[in-house]
Image (cartoon, rainbow, N blue to C red; front, top):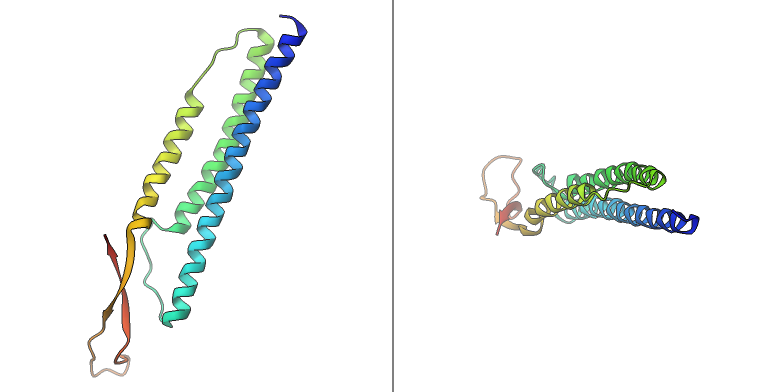
Length: 149
C-alpha cells in the first residue's frame, strides 16, 4: 500500500475514534446534568412542601444519570480498544469492518432511553390528608402521592 493511502486510513481511524469520544463525552455530560437536575427538583420540592419526600424507586433521574455516565465511560474504553484493533489491521493490511461496537452502543443507549420513559410519565398530585386526633398530624396539609399516567 502506498504511504499516502496508509496515512489516509490511519487518519480516518483517528476521526472515527474522535467521533466515539465525542459521543461518550456527550453521554457523560447528559448523564451528569440529568442526575443533578433531578436532585435539584427533589430539593426544590422538599423546600416548597416542607415535608420529607418518600424514597422513590430504582428508576429515577439520579440512577439514570449515573447509568449514562457509566455508559459514556464504557464507550471510551471500547472505542480505544477498537481504535487499536483497526490500527493494527491497517498496518497488517487486513482490515475487517465490525459493527459490533455500533450495535452494543445503540442497544445500551436504547435501553437507557426506555428506562427514562417512566420518569417522563411519573407525575405527582396532592391527596388531602384526613385530620386525625394525633399530635403528629397537621390539619390542612397535603401529602404528595405518585401517579403514573
